[in-house]
Image (cartoon, rainbow, N blue to C red):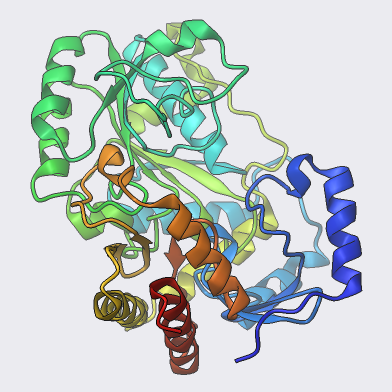
Length: 430
């Protein structure tokens, strides 16, 4: 396996990127790699280096890059026009498939990003409940809207339920409108909800937070206490929707929220997301609710973008095929087990956490149950691990391995070889 080399052409592009973009990046990863193309489970940079791709566009490419059936679906509709700012037949069919698949989905609204979807889901919940405060979980990621950027990654976390603002430019008055609870701590979470239930518009959570699995009974407990107080429970399934099961994490874990947000995998690589949920809450997006003061406008140039709908319909059809999720989980388990075995053999304090479709390695021997326990991970070792993986032909972001249904046996073997070299270097044995 040859290590990564950089051509003069890519060096020029990297320099141009630094002249044009803050930090030299579009805002997602800062690794000075300029991608030229992707096919299946691989990507190539401008220098011609080929990588096994576990970033997968940060998740959307569950079927791999340029899946031929998705490409064909797009081409079949290009000559009919691309967008209309009006309801399209493909968008109706796409929504029907989502309602049929997702347990909580009775109505759907499409957006173009997960950030937008979570912001609108929270807005609809506030309109429905007539209250302003929300509760989120420390370390939970819900996009880049103002509410979501509370206690996403606090360096010095305050006492619960106080929120910590993670971004400049957010109005200071908003901080008091967000309550924060610890993931996987049902006792503390329930106590906060009980104390503030009359003020809460919603509870929003990732049912699988970043790469932390919910402990037995945790999601069920949150569901029970929110249901008892008629507080809408929102599952942010931008990552887990159609990835953990065809019905998402709510099907996988057996807990149904009132609303959910969906994204990434639903549109086969096109920019699209959705809010889905109960009829009575989703009706806040209906202009007829203006008369009762609950109308929540949701205008977007590319809402229900027909090309995304075409790609989404093709994607969902493939995901419905027999054995798809068995294969996805089997691929993920092989990589997880190989990584765990190599780390144990090297006696490096680390653990592999998550579910087979998306997981990560944390360089700590502490149990990982919530955001604060994740802080025990050694970030310097993680950074070196990522740099070495890239040099040895494995592409991923700063965190997470995303698995696709098209990662092959050869990909897994190549990944194992790369991991062996990388962990050998980390342990000082090679």
